[in-house]
Length: 225
Ligand code: HEM
Image 1: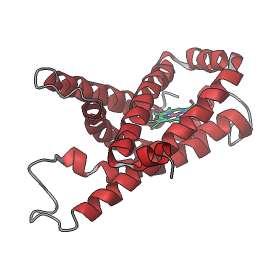
Image 2: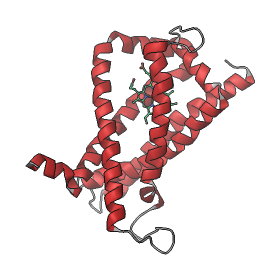
Image 3: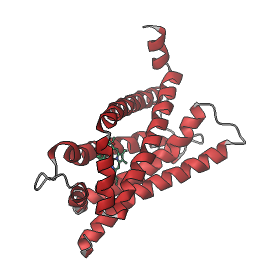
């Protein structure tokens, strides 16, 4: 194994990969959220936003390939680190693995991450696939706003999104501060501030994304859409 392979496979190498890919995903989520919030401005605003993205499709495709790689690295590395940690600490602590040095959020990263992965597979096989290939499940049209309404009026689909977004909030709450810690930003003076920013970011993302399925499901039940 060359030096690159050794570095990537070392414990600190894996932590750096988690932090770097994690920060990239944190930035992606902000852009994605900003775009999706145009749904609240109505059909024309959202369709116009998607049409704008369509005008730069080749760039979007390149970003998507980058994103796929970033997600894959993040997931595989996360699983590897979790297995390593398990091997290093095979005996659980008396109270179900709890320890003074870890929080509920850090101990459950693998669980929240696994559920977010299941959410992502559902998300890409519905929204991404219909937007880019198959069109509206009923008539194959590329009326983007209507596609969103179609999925979110299903209670189980909206519920899965809502639950996944709460877990995404938990995942980001720990992931944000953990990434900065890996990069060495854990100075006593600034770290509480980083933790606070991380929590605000996690809440904004969870509430921003999570409110959409709730709003559109309730609108469909109450006759708004
Ligand atoms: C209410 C929540 C969400 C809505 C309404 C939503 C909507 C969409 C839509 C419509 C697309 C297709 C865009 C296009 O190809 O033009 C898309 C793509 C995508 N979404 Fe989401 N999304 C949500 C949450 C999330 C979350 C939480 C994640 C990550 C954890 C995520 C990750 C992605 C990825 C990776 C793609 C493919 C890349 C892209 O096209 O931007 N989405 N989403």
